[in-house]
Amino acid sequence: MSQAVDAKLFACTQSVELAEKIAKAYGLPLGNVITSTYSDGEFQPSFEESVRGSRVFIIGSTNPSTRNLMEMLLMLDAAKRASARHITAVMPYFGWARQDRKDKPRVPIAAKLVAKMLETAGATRIITMDLHADQIQGFFEKPVDHLFASTVFLPYLESLKLENLTIASPDMGGSKRAYAYSKFLESDVVICYKQRAKANVIEHMELIGDVTDRNVVLVDDMVDTAGTLTKAADLMMERGAKSVRAICTHAILSGNAYERLEKSKLESLIVTDSIPLKQQSDKIKVVSCADLFAYAMNAVHQNQSISEKFLM
Image (cartoon, rainbow, N blue to C red):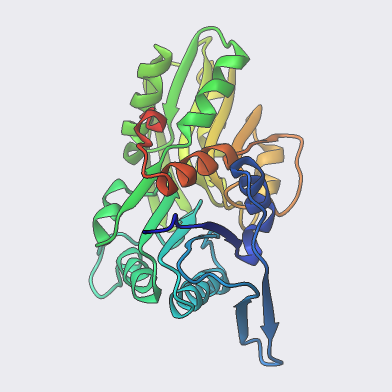
């Protein structure tokens, strides 16, 4: 007679705060993991309880530094070698996803490399949210549950009760996401067209559409240096927008991002807690994705559908 498989939740160090929220929503405590560190920086995570025959969920975003990805790989390998039956990498933010193709000669496709490393390390399933490019799911040979942050953002947007709402994409690549939001909210759409001099440096930006007297909400999957968002917000206010807000799933916020946000005409930036904030800001509102991940993880464990959480 077969026995039910136990579920066990563990956190990588970079995502402990979010993992604690997920565990609370799931209804289980986080498992015990300790990390030993050598003087040269090498580290070794260790499960301090048995995972034999269990369904193990390892929660950790893989935003740089590379330590975060390495920790996920080591924990996957440890679970595999400890005879866990199912090993799910729960990655609220899938790092290295911007390198999803060869956009010039002699460069890597890092997203594909990361996918292969995760599977080699022992992941039998991936749960993630708002990939930089949807097709990254095809880099995996294992099942991928790709969640959408719109599930948590749309109720928040509706609660603002904004009149004359317009959804905006900060670039051509995000137009599909913007149209999906606008269809749900029955709003207009505008798109920013930008040309880059190099990575993270915008040479020129132009607006496609009218934002006069509109409350604009920019929608993107991530905010890194905040250069694009703040430039887009300033441009829209110059073109007559009533207000500009931004919704970005993953708050990387590197370099001078916080300074740019404070100086910009953005009224607010709404993000999830997929990546912990480096510092607090009155302009930043965090909407937790913990319940969404807890729901998906429980559904996976119970072999149930998660399609009702796919709002877009």
